[in-house]
Length: 204
Image (tube, rainbow, N blue to C red; front, side):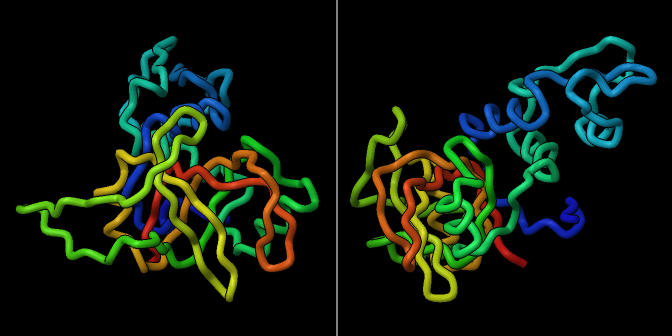
C-alpha cells in the first residue's frame, strides 16, 4: 500500500482541481470531534497533520486548506495509483475507468516545443507556451507522459506552467482526473479519455 512515507516528491498542486477531487474522495468538509471521525471518514492522523482543532464539533471545509494539505489527505484514497500507460489504457478500454475517475500515471513528462529549463528561484525564467487550448472551460497546455514505447496525453492548466515546465523531460507521477475526448489510439488501445493534471510529483 502506498503511503506518504514512500510517496514521490510533490512539486505542484492545482487548487481548482484538487478541491473537487478531495470532495469526491473524502468529502467537502472535515469533522474533528472526540471519539468520531465525522461523516466523511476523515481520521485523526490526517486531522493532526492538518492541525485541525480537536474541539468536538469543529468543522473545516477542504476549500479553506492549502492545496498541498488537501493532496496529502486524499493521496492514499486514490484507488488507481501509479499506473503504467498500458494499465491505464486497458482500464479505459475495458470501461473499468471512466470520466471523472481519479488516477495517477507514471512515466517521463514531455512538453512539446518547450525546451528544458534551469530553474533559478532568485530570477525565475519566463516560460512561453507556444500553443494553448480551452478544455472544459479552462485554458490549458498539452503535455505527454512517455514510458515503454507508449505515449499518453496530459493537459495542465496554464497557471501551472512555471513549475510543470521545470519537470519537462523528467520522470514524474501525474495525479489527475479523466475527461472524455473523441476516440484516438494509444499503442493499439482505443481510448476516449484524456488526463487533466491536478498534481505533479517528481519520481524518486
